Image 1 (tube, rainbow, N blue to C red):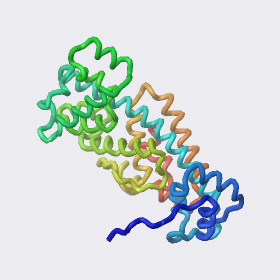
Image 2: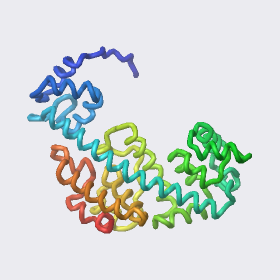
Image 3: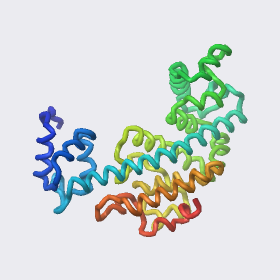
Length: 302
């Protein structure tokens, strides 16, 4: 049964007292108050979960600064994920536009006959039209002024303004031949790529809303392909961060024009995970990291 929410508003000083009552050590009340005022008590509490021995009871010796360090680690991790997703998303947009445009005419995406019969094409296209009309990109205004098909645009133009979620749905609804041609660039199966796109859209949304990722158990998990590299013991499971990291690595490996970025990105990921991991005994487990994760074949070849 649900009940009405009855918790009252709590001042910053009240929030600090509550944290202390849970066993959290706070050496500098002023600095702690400033930080809570900045990120919100509720968000801070999420980062505190890894430090609790039971709900609302912190492990002995846990300090405010340790939880703040976990937040800083997660922020840096999200920034790295955001960088990699930018590269991956742009590559997917270009790949889908190129292949779909080659297999169909410039406006092939406007025809339901080019998609699987269960795909909700009309709904998808209506949302794409909404995104197109809302866009303030100069190239969209140019197209609107010069061509009669607006709000329909050639697929290689449309993919530049459609959301990542719309791009993922488009791939999921395509005919098998188109899906296979697109998946071939990344050397994965059609269903695997479909799952990975869904997961990356979810991950991108988490990062865009500054939500915790380091110890999150994925609500939308990436399917793991067959093969030793994706199975125990090299891959504990697909519910934690390491699975997503290797999915991103797989995409990045197949973006040869970004090899300089990828080389630098890999170094920064390793530096962060080796030297700034949150001070929690089971931090590696919470991230799904095997003991020798840096020697994983998919990571080594990146």
